[in-house]
Amino acid sequence: MAIGIEATFLLGTFTGHRPDGSPDQLPDPARLHAALLNAAGQGSTAVHDKSGLHASAKAIAALEWLDANPPTGIRLPRVYPVAALPITAFRREGVIRKEGGAWTDKIGGRPFSDGYAVDGPVGWCWDHGIPEAVRAALEELCADVGCLGEATSPVRLVVTDIEPTHSLDSGASIFVAGGTDLRVPTTGRTAALTAAHTTANGKSPSIAGDRHKTDENPSPPTPTRQAVESRRYRPRGAAPTDAPWATVVLLATARTIQPAHRVRWCTALHRALIARIGFGAPPLITGAYAKGVRQPANRLAIQFLPAGMLAQHGMASGAFALLIPSDASSEELAPLHHALTGLRRFSLEGRHAVLGTPVTVRGDEFWHPPLPGHARRWTTNPVAVPETSPQRRGHGVGGSRSRWTLRDAARVSVGLVWRDIVAPRRDSSRWFEEIAARTVDYGVKVHEARLLHTSDVAAWVHKTPKQILVQPYRATLSLGGLAADRTLVAIGQSRHLGGGLLVPVDSPADGFADPAEDA
Image (cartoon, rainbow, N blue to C red; front, top):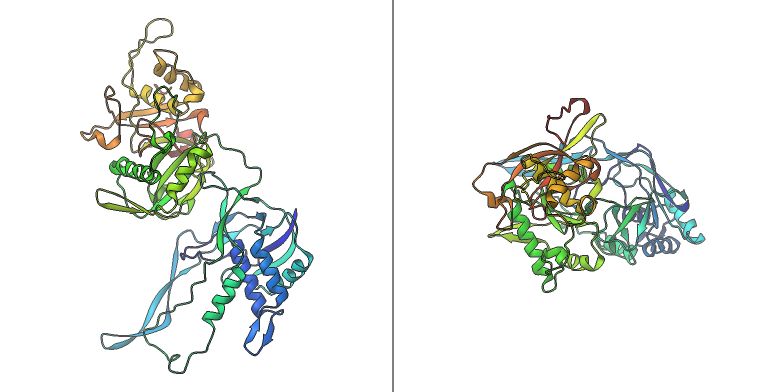
């Protein structure tokens, strides 16, 4: 427990919006600071002079302390959307225009009921405590805060002990998954908001300047973004991930990319990243390892996911996903961080893709969990490509006379992702056959595998050894004990550049009837 500020929403819901207008799930420290500053300037502790009400020196000192001391812990309750689907309310807003010779009272649309229900209070706390003078000032300001967010979110703020669920990660990186990014005020935020308020509410307009305009739309001032930064808060006691790609960095884009074009677009993004890094890009990113160097099982992978696969992360568009291997070092990731900084667009054959701000999620918590009573299988989306040609089976002890099939190739593709676990040493001429056999010991099953009959096989793979026949295939698999139900995985020859993505397919557990040849 640590001393802090607790917010209890009296209606059990929070409604607020981000700077881009999208609904916000919970109030962040920057919103709390703004509400306390508003209370300081208009509440019971405000001081009055000839120019109006102002925050007292005591209140300003407390707010400036908040500027310099971000919360070291926060309590985040579970949240649920109030409405299952977006709702828009249409109403007259006093915008009158002359259209077609007649005056029209225009009707405008506004988001309605786009808040979130919360199952408990939100809290912000400081492990090192709050100075007594600051605490006394904050207690007075909290009593004057009526709502946090919009007016439909009445709140009760109190200074009390908080049991945090998340802790501030001062050394956070976009390549370390997990946690929640929140806006926090920094030194100068109180002064910036005060100056913006003075500018927006300075000299009263003249009579002529204040007259009614029939075509005037509502235009509230945009809050200043000065002296605000994003900080990462991580769940306390979170276990490290053991996924092949521990972290997924999502770069949203409005561009629609067809499945057959994913490899080409992911390759274009890969080239753009390497170009921004320049000379000395690490093999983790380029994929080019020196001769004789043992290559890791996985390196940086780039996938494209359409909007329908990203709803669980609050994204309304598709996104490029950068998959960061679990064993990547900070030295290898530093050039990638530099390349992503400021990367807002890249192109392919004259067409551009504009990228959003990076969003980081854990690789083992990427997909939504399966419903109770349902079993999870995985299907290639859209296809995978084998890493090896059909193998000639051995004979006698240690060998098999059965024919090599696509199911075997799919098992090899799975096994190579977890190569360090399944078959870490390549000390046999039948290594691929051994991988296919050993995956069965981990519960891997290939329920279905079939070739994709197409003449454009180059669309599904970027590069492949000359001796390997490109055979794109679709498969349905179970990953057994190798992967958790929510892990993001790609398999096959093109898994690092847009191919072989595995997406979950859930069905009632008692409805799964395995084919005869299943293991």
